[in-house]
Length: 567
Length: 43
Image (spheres, each protein chain N blue to C red):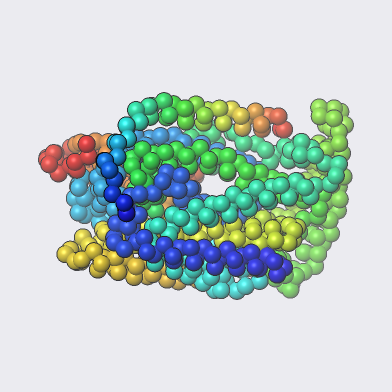
């Protein structure tokens, strides 16, 4: 990174922290701090919904995934518009008119205090830990790219976000999200434009797409019905829909977004806007990964993208093996480059194109083989090395992007991480203060007292996330544990809300034990079957509804007076 | 803050959400078909 890049990153970090803190004056009471007095416009809420969902892991990980595996991941988002329509009909008007601060607060009105406490507790555990992971994952990668140690990256990212969220509340979260989305959109657009400009003069965009297609990188729709395959049309439409329903309808970090809208109509519009923009945006993020893949058809890619990992192998007893793999890699690259040029220049469908395609496929497989061998060596040297695909995009950016643009894209990665962290901190604080502190510990206090408590609690969760991030950065397996815990919880939580909103007969006992049964069933399915994780939410939700209804039928129905006045 | 001379007119409630939802789903179908054709074009 050059001086100009550092200046761009520093300007971004200073401006966004200042901008968040200056919104402190708009949060002088609890409703302003947690819900922005329900006065935000739909477009700001919609951008905040997208910014919360788009973490740095999404930006860096999915470009790397497209580089290695193509664009199949786009199917993951097919269920999103369906889920948004269902939420616009159900959750948005229910939560908004119930005038709740948290989604779990509604469960006490519908069921009982223990169901609210259990769901809110699981949310705090799941989100508190995952917030640490959201700080840790990009920190590990950025620290290598920027040359900082991991602790510095964690503190820069975690503490600056905690600072503006703590003082500015949800106003700061939303308005910084809007600006962060602008930085992210600019980063994506500029990046795509510059990659295409770096192809050899004789290779057009159409040629590049043909080469990517020949390598299987442009397969976007897989209509096969296979429960063990992660990304198919059906897992995206059904599993993705259940995941989106759980995330946008039951996770406080997203529910809080649409509760800040001016009206039910604006809340609905914000969700539909994010559904409309999400798929094209994800398409372009994946296309960047594919274009980086095409770029490396004409420029030699590193054998291992994680340079720290490669250096460790070079210093180990595996150095001779690594060097022979490097030689094989270089030879395979020369053959693949030749085949890629021939394929790009051949008339589509011609005999020459067919031959070039075969030669290209063989060379591509040979290169993939050498890379697999090198990564296996790196894993033998250090088993905790993160997945190499996560280094593809940052390595490409720092090596091949022009001065200034590198800074913009690193700022976009920071923006993606910080926008997710801030929304989660705000949601964690809201659930802690509203569902536990105000409900169980101090029921009668002034608004100023709860506002001060909310700020301290936000600060606590920020420090907690940084603390988890320090350990998560060292223990790669912890990230998986946190993600698995989240997947056990999400579908089951959705089941509780289906019982609450979709049925009149369900009781608190049914919902409470149904939730526990749902989480247990997902734990069993994940441990004893090969079903892809996208289906866990379907399983969890179905078990909660079935067990919850069976238990509810064994006791008296809840009196109508216990239901919230939602009309 | 200046006082208003009269109460603001209440905004009429939007009554065509059903059509909006149908348009969202139709767009999703169109996007899936477009992506499938995109794959076929460069396969």
